[in-house]
Length: 425
Image (tube, rainbow, N blue to C red; front, side, top):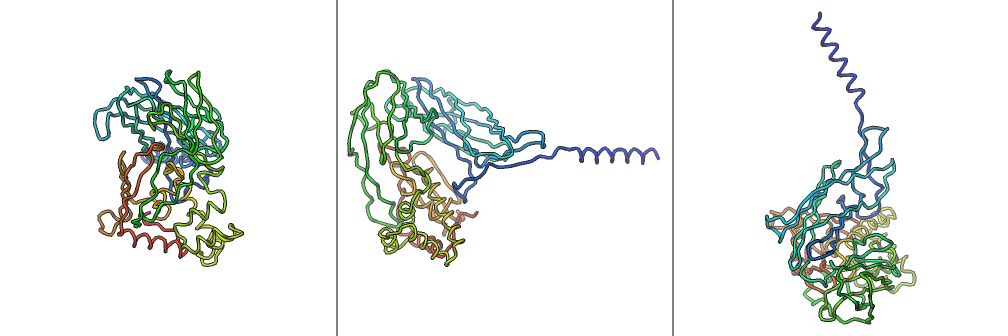
């Protein structure tokens, strides 16, 4: 009898414990239209060489795809990030020059707004050497890891990492700005007394199809105009032009320097009918493109194009618009170099094919694989890094006639009113 009573007592305690256990709630920030195809975390980083032995790294994590949790209704929602970083003398080496870790905790109310979480840390990086920085961001609540890599360039005192750019008293994590933005630029080199600004206003052409054998336009360093700024302190300000970009140099003996780009108010999104038509060129015929470009009501014509390929359904057209221009926006965010990301080789492939099944990246090359990697039918795009004076983010596709079939297959899929996905997701 005593044994039965003890079992019942234990059962009561278990039931009470289960009933009183705190329920855990989860929520994500209000999702804006970035890219419906991706649930990746946006991580940005910039490096600033403050002297010959120390570089400061500024880190930005956009909370859009973070998971916020709370133990019960009496506490606030919170996200938790663990940041790990390691600095090595060169890629794929085990010799670590500097490393550490820290946490970022963000608390929020029931309605979590999209915002940026920023932090910084110092690196022991001596002059006359280039380093490879790997930053790992771990979303503790979501149990998901993201990696951001950065080349720390301390070979000279003229490259862009010797400048720290800010706008509205906030560190600028991207080199693109709005027209008429007043940008502040800080530098640590006390020997700088004069700044030369080369101005470029050319509108660069759209990427050629991946099977095209035509030579792309050559990037030539020929400024449209030049002006100079005399500096007496370690900072100066500059107003962003209406269109084009500024290349800022501290010496006329080299092209090394800092580049600031100007795009419209909607960038990295698409703002008007002209831009919509231009970046839809990849899935348009030549006649369709010319008809849209020359139309008196361009917005009506581009809307008609999407409704037509959506089998006459306005709702289907809206979904196609959302996905296609969502990819345009993502391409602008990640692949912009001296021109908008959607015009680049990587941007073109991303817009049409979506996120690769697998992606292999180092400082000199990116390989994107679509389909099952062991399958001979898988499509592989190889992008090689090219040196240009304006950006380290310029990669050129190795074009081939073998890409004609997968390209037209993907384009036809779009034109049949479907979002092309060939990445196993």
